Length: 368
Image (cartoon, rainbow, N blue to C red; front, side, top):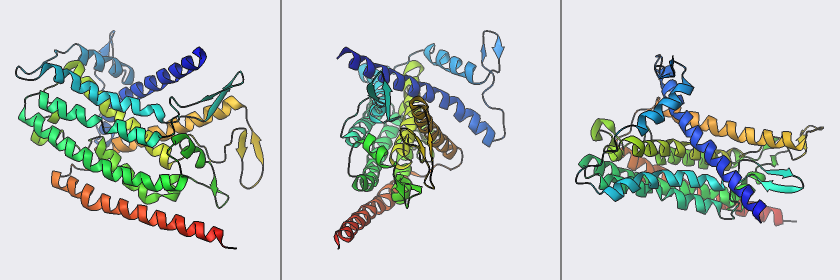
């Protein structure tokens, strides 16, 4: 019993450590990425222990020091308790959502099988949507507790936007669930280890391409980033729902935003790009479709799976950062129109078409 608790704690610490550190690194990558796109140098002036211009290392040290040493300002007429609670509500869902995302298959140590997933629950998708829906409370409460009209407008925008796109996101996932027949994320990933036509990986992107486009668009909108950053909208709302936040509290909002990027990339990877699956790689090695088997040690297989998952997640994080510095911000009416009049009908149509396809396939398989 104690060993099992220790294993779960170790996995939780590892996932939390990796998500928080990747969120911090993404802050630096975003600034350097924007510098590359805009043909400038980017962040390079932080001086730590007399060494300046060391880029990533110094920036990761300088940013937390800067935030944590700033004054914690609370508006005189704001609600002190809710003003402090809101950043926690914004960061917490982004971190706990990762608990049900599998980052590998099974690691065997001394005859004990360790599932590379913090919480292997059979309703993983429902858990993710339940946790993701809580993040809206952090925005709304923080906006209202700030006693600022710009914050309040940003909170109202954020609540409307996030609720709207959660519907399209949920419907886009239905097609994937109907095909794989399970709510458990680990089983969905394992099902994508099959081959279509004997050579093409049975990833969700090939089975549900429309659902992928819908889900990815809705996920970017849920993270409240350009072109969907209406809740912040610097040109109209100064800084939006967190305009009255500074120091460590603003750092929590900032970290939560990048943690949401990591979670969105992990979900896209898990549902549509095979998760930890590597094409033709089984538990004992590579099984090539044209014949032949390359046997590999168990630890090598596990490392390849975890590495494949990490590479896919980092790639989709980079895509989201690239979008920020490529597309202009939408108007608020355009964001609402896209969610309700375009994504929602297409998501419903995708569910209907998927259901018809499954029924026709079952009937064809029953024919003598």
